[in-house]
Length: 391
Ligand SMILES: *Cc1c(COP(=O)(O)O)cnc(C)c1O
Image (cartoon, protein in one colour):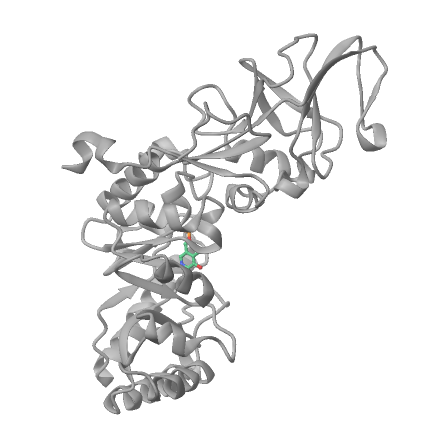
């Protein structure tokens, strides 16, 4: 694997797999009675699905979760073991491929169940189906009124040997706002919908509703399995809940670039498109060779923070497609000097959360949108070096 020392890269997203493994162990300790699903959808929130999934499994995640079936199939094709679940289907999806790859299929309604049953008829084994209840999120999932019909049809398919109902599950709307009345309401409805299905004869292996914020703050939500995404990558689900260290988590991604140019300019010099920044006096400008095509949010123009030569600098003027400029205040770090956009924060660099604030969004969006033009550089790949925690 490449390390930061070897290649003079324009930009790189360094992915600390030891931090990821430690986060998984920490999350398991937060939910000791439940199994842990590492959610690795959207290329592991921008961190790289395959290496992150492997590291999560090494650290004790017994389930992997994705949104789309294509993402789940790619994990299996890469040889990842254990249970893999995906939940975002549209009609005509690759049901048969997913059944053959031994993937658990999230099913939110009758149309999906019927497509599963049809695909399972030609497969060698029953399809593993997990029925999703909408307990109040108002997004995917089966409405309470439609639940008896879905449960009944799933039980008929199970009796026919075509499916096995392995899970009953749901998703929370406001887990990142402790005390929000919807939380207790959703948990109560989830218990009712699970109890109903079990009375009808469903024997699920797993019942689950908890995402990262629920795993960290709501023990009553843990049931048999917790589905953690953002916390696996060491990011707090919300700044209101706390910083990552409050939960024993460490950010996994460090985004850095090499300055492409440092130059002297006079006062009154406009900077970048639209001249929204004008140098207040003679100064030096540094050119950071990443832009919105790399996922650096244009909304952070004039506000995004960068660590250069031990000092926080701020994006000067507009972020362009491939580059942005910072005012170095007369410093001359030189072309090639490192500019750290975000990282764990303990070497003085900003965090993804700082960028989220600067861009008026959430840290989930910051890491997830880092583009494919930025190479992911994996460090601490070998879990033998994790030390005590492994034993
Ligand atoms: C993305 C997702 C998760 C993980 O959410 P985090 O807040 O990142 O932990 C869990 N469950 C479902 C259904 C999801 O779509």
